[in-house]
Length: 249
Ligand SMILES: Nc1ncnc2c1ncn2[C@@H]1O[C@H](COP(=O)(O)OP(=O)(O)OP(=O)(O)O)[C@@H](O)[C@H]1O
Image (cartoon, rainbow, N blue to C red; front, top):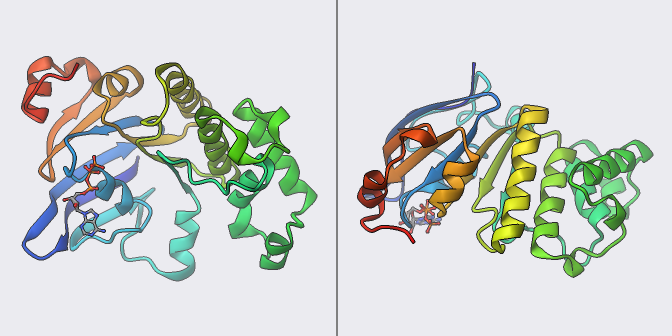
């Protein structure tokens, strides 16, 4: 069954300037999809449809068999809880420790007073430690986030999505600011979690080679339309030139 689905989605921020034009796609559970395309093609907007930061002008957004774009209140939050998001800039609370940052992934199920006083239940602390262990940072639990390297920060952000019990990971250029080796380590971790935990991953990327290496499927967006949708093996240099209008180095 499809975990994520768009049916004839159109989206524009300003009238007369469509950003997504009649997009239909279906992503099965546990697939690793990379979305590529030139700046302004609509990649981030497409990702935002799946966390409710953007509502389509028309068309439908489905998550795990539920019509998502129409949901409000508790029903919407219940599904949002399953959608983890990581960003190029990591979006951690710099002055907090790694453990505190990961614990923030439990905010939806922990009473507000506990969260505000930092008094998380023991079971949540143990779960946060397990999430840190899963990303290889168990020994950094008490380390302030601002002292970490970029790769470590992204791993903490991934641990926070595990803490959230996310079954879908939306990754908006997650390794764009990392050096090649560190980028590889983060992508390896994402791939490992996809395989081991059945995570469905949608990653926006400007790096076509990374998309080819790490994904099960590539979706190329151009001017808000699907230009290519297929396995990495079907991606060719000609398509690269047609998508970007030049050869990437
Ligand atoms: N909040 C917004 N308000 C108005 N216009 C927006 C907003 N967000 C994006 N846009 C416009 O929508 C278009 C698509 O933007 P989007 O960020 O989805 O593209 P992208 O493919 O992710 O680009 P990039 O690779 O540069 O991040 C762009 O023309 C952008 O200027």
